[in-house]
Length: 275
Ligand code: RIB
Image 1: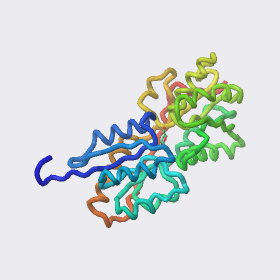
Image 2 (image 1 turned 60 degrees about the vertical axis):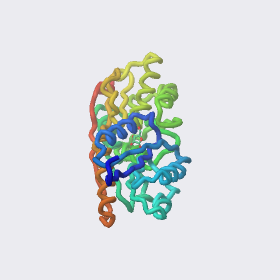
Image 3 (image 1 turned 120 degrees about the vertical axis):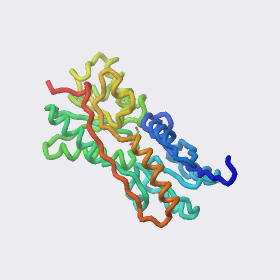
Image 4 (image 1 turned 120 degrees about the horizontal axis):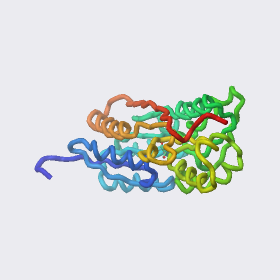
């Protein structure tokens, strides 16, 4: 390093490196690493969050980006206040809200998919969601359910283990048995697995069943059929996370910074008119 030049180390915690959403988030942060900023990434499952924070603090981070949902019971600020480490949160629950954060309107995101299905004439619907729901995923599901309620449509909820491709594949039989005409899968990774499962079972998407995902991961437009999905502005989220955290580091007394991003529904080949 140059004499007299100090770069700042920022720790980023995500739940997994394998999910494309987080791989894209990391890539965006790396690409836009500001001058004088170094990033260190940590993948931590639910029960490893505290130890991830502790090891990043021990490595001398000057700021933290909590890029994963924190369980409701855990008060992240209590853990970090003692350390006096500036931090920013993404995908959080209401317990963590009195802080710098980036939010996307998950509730609206779920609603976009519901309206799309209704517009195509579907009335028998299912949701594929992970067993353990984080706050943001719950909002996503609620948004879908609440748009359907006034139409007297109650979606069948099909639970699976987690957000992975395998979990999507694993519910294939249940989705077929539910006899729905359209299914909302709460992220694209699970969608990819379910698409494979349905094709393996001889079904045609969207002729036999429509399927929509969430995230708009980079492969969504390349799979067959190209996936209808809700696009999250993951690149902008990554850029903004670093920018806001650097603001906080440079101006510690700023009021809470809240950055909101919009979601858009990207209509592709995996959804079509009922019947
Ligand atoms: O695919 C990973 C999901 O987990 C994304 O939808 C993101 O919002 C996160 O919560």
